[in-house]
Every structure is written in structure tokens, then in C-alpha cells.
Length: 273
Image 1 (spheres, one colour):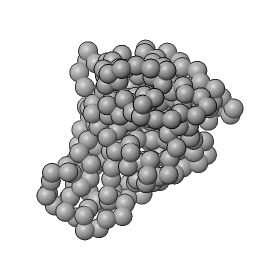
Image 2 (tube, helix red, strand yellow; image 1 turned 90 degrees about the vertical axis):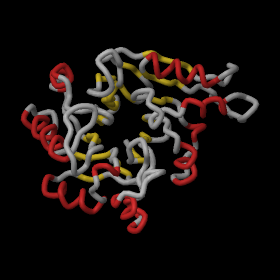
Image 3 (cartoon, rainbow, N blue to C red; image 1 turned 30 degrees about the horizontal axis):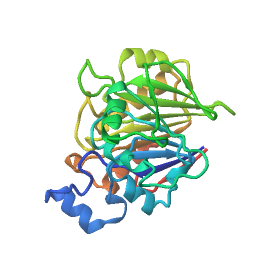
């Protein structure tokens, strides 16, 4: 399983598009891993989590072929995770799709409705939509995927984090972004699994938050509980999805998390296991 971190920023990017705060000015000066585009993850070539406004940039920067994308999982309909208007450009007047035209899109009903509204007109290239229910398994040719409720937005909303279990060897990857501390029912569900790789929200960086997003200390609390419950032990633990409001540069994040054996994601990072 190859996991590619296409974008590792929160909604406004880093440096933020209309900002001159010290953290953004420092990122412009340091460049490199401090330049972060909006969040998205690619798994192998056919699986993707979220479709942000920077998806065209990701295609160019990371030499992606979106015609190979077959399974797209949307966490929630916020615009930094779902640029719904882009799917209009799958229509036959805008593209020439060879071979298999199918693109399966999975998510909360509100996310799917947003994409449908953006399509304007439908044709044979329109995606195939799958409305998800929390904890209900989705089967694809390569993975069993479990949508789990995220601690994000309001109680009436249904944002998801995703657990991927590879069928061939039962290796697991948990993508947990735009979430605060996990709900009790999520902890109970995860007790049945051993996670090999986890990518966890750290939007607040050097700040603090238990709801909607996480900060550095809350990340440690999640990691500690995962270890106490024997859900995670000797795998790869990654923090991801950073806001400039968290202030810490990539190097400062690394300095804090390194003693805890936690990797700090950056745009273009790859993990293969």
C-alpha cells in the first residue's frame, strides 16, 4: 500500500492566501516543507480521500493520472475538502475518458448532493454515488473500508474518518482528519483492529483543541489511548492537516513530535507498507 500525502494544510493553505501573520511570513521565507496545500491523500493510484480546491495543482505537482482514480472517499462537504464544481469537467464535452469511465464517490448524502448540483448536466461520465452509514463496511476490489463518525461540525451532520483494511494481508490505514477526540463508539469499534498506519489531525499545531480538530497535546492523548487499548503499537504514526493559526513551522512540529516517534506530514511525503 502506497500512501501519498498530496496536501497537508487546513482550509486556508499555508501560507494562507490572504494572510501576513508571522507564521505565514516565515513559511514564505523557509519554503520547502513549510509550503502546504489543501489536504488530500492518495492510496495507490485508484483510491483518494477528498478532492480539495488544489486538486489540479496536485495532479501537476505529483504527476497524478486522475483517469486511474476509481474510488473517491469524501470526508465532509466543507469546500477545502470538496471542490464539487471540478466534477463538471468529467462531462464528455470537457474530457476524453478512455476505457473504464466509472468513478465511485463515497460519502455523506450532503457531500454527494453538493457534487450532483455542481454537475449541472449529467451524461455517461457522471460518477456513481454511494451514500454511507457510519460503521457500515464498503467493499472494493482491494479494501474493506469503514466510515467512522468524526468529531467535527454539528451533531446533526455526518462527517467521516476512514479506516482502510487491505484484503490481501489485512494491513490497516486510518485517515482521521477534521476530527477532534474520537467519540466513545469509535473507540469501541477500533478495539477490534490493529492499526498499522494512522494519519491524525493536528490542525491547531502548537495550540489546543479537543473538538472539531486537535492540537499537539491532544494528539498525544489519542496516541496514548490507542496504545493502552492495543489498537496501535509499533506502526507508523503521522500528524497531518495543519493551520497557520497553530503557528509552529514544520521544523518546530518535528522537534516536538520526534521524541514520541510521530512523523510530521508534508506535501509529497510517501509511506509504503
